[in-house]
Image (tube, rainbow, N blue to C red; front, side):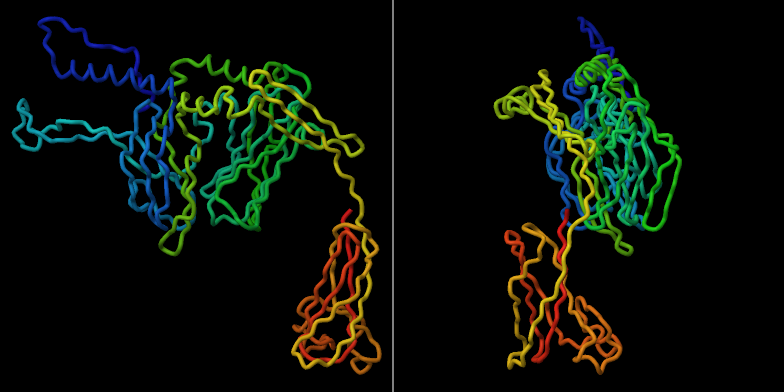
Length: 519
């Protein structure tokens, strides 16, 4: 049911002697249902009211807990008992040959119940002469494999615009930008990435252009750069990039992608697709909240009820392909935040209004870089309509100063010991860089001297790590195998070196050390 017209409402008018037919009784039900559902949609919104958590029971099975939701037609969707089902048995699931994200959805449904014989039926077939005595309001679960446009949910389009930058079968990239900002305010432009887990490590970069937005360097526009972490990779990312709005109200900026091109690197492969991504950003003098509320109140009834899809996205499920089979890797609840809030309960909890549980004031804080020769600055703004203080901290950009370093040698006289391994610890060494944290690097130093005169291939060498790997080669070390450690005393600016010889050996060992102190 797309964009259902619940209005204008029409109800039965009763009078003595009126002949009531099926049409009249259906009109009675429709009138009551339409009034209730329209109230649900306009007053409570659409989404999950309570419950309906999705749980991975095992690698291939999910369970939907009891709960209630309202769809975008105001119809109640009630799950009265937990539903446990194999993922592969849910309508819409396709076992493709790669890992990906899929979306578990729930929709309102109706089913006939209590089949009875219809006395008034003119059919001679016993099957066609039957009717259902009841209609059961229920639900259906199904899978959607394509990521939806984030701009289609709720009224997000009133406060932000979403543009699709790039999309293929395995990767989708969106950019979100607010519609309203106040003069000289910090605001975020958000990069949203949805990818299959089989896609190599992703790197995204491009330049944004705009006359009245400023990046870290204080120049118009800015750069967007995202690199997927090497470890703990996810199938979905949202990354915020801070910009500052111009100082004059009344300006309208067109935030565009410079050169109309984005650079996407997938492992070793580089793509440079064209993109006409753009956003309209308004710098307004009035509070942003008032501008959004004004747009909301000016929505027509048709605009408010407009929604092509009537179902709710309950979960985003990441699955991993394993040969011909698959396994559930992760379940994210309500990925598009489709909630229908109970305003009364939220007010009592102090989430809405000025309840004591939330305190008298709210605060927000943000930081940005200034030029390195400027002084730090703190700006405080108060928004009385929401009892909020906004703190903006300007931090001078750090100057690049070369770090300090020092080096030296610690000598150890090894003795033949009956023990298989023996430890030797140096005296306390002053590294000369003062107090504080430093980095210490050590290696076994070997020079051409009396000990190694017979080994002409050995000029000055320093061995690091497990130098036993050079054994039986022309680069073999003459020093016995040993473990090397160091202990630092940051407050005194000193350290000690310790070695543990793995076999009884009489020799003199030189440990070369380097100490680095970051500027």
